Image 1 (cartoon, one colour):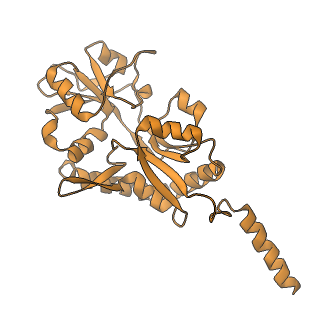
Image 2 (spheres, rainbow, N blue to C red):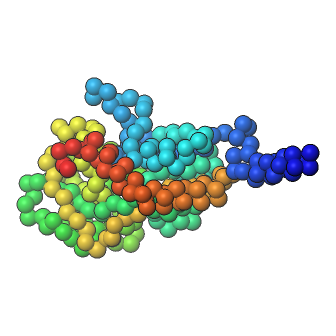
Length: 267
């Protein structure tokens, strides 16, 4: 009898202090991704070239592995609303976030779980453009530089206090490039080929790419809401699982799978 009572006390202690002790009453964890898509990291599956509401990508597969057995949901939101939802606590964490000073103050960050290469794209007919440049500021000195609204260019070496000409989406960007309103487009070099594959090749003019040599590979993080009741556990659990997947070589395999799936001819 005493042994049974002792085991019951141990069980009660573990249940009480488990981060999901009240899983029957607490809502599932909620993660947000960008509704305009961020391939190959998160995007909507296409069936017969028609966009569905099914999410896929590196982030989606990472969440499946890291939070196996844990109730969670993934929602797609405009990026600014996604970040605002972290501030209010409506969302527990946001995937695929770059870092800047404001985000360091406002949110809790995971360890980096992938890295991208800062660079730029330009019309193929602009043969006089260098394939390497030291910084975003040096690029701005050569002509108009565009980017996408909501994207963070803090790591691209722009002049402090300056910004790029912001486009609503890739299609508007393509029109601005064709019209000569944008001479350069700042982006991580790994992203545009996947975006063109998702949206269709016909909308974007032929582009060449260049590397910003003064900008190191850029880390991307999961940002955690400081108002999430599970913020500490989320950070520790995610970091531990990512370290485990990295040591097993799984992170690279998952990313390569989605890159090949979207852009098979580039590998």
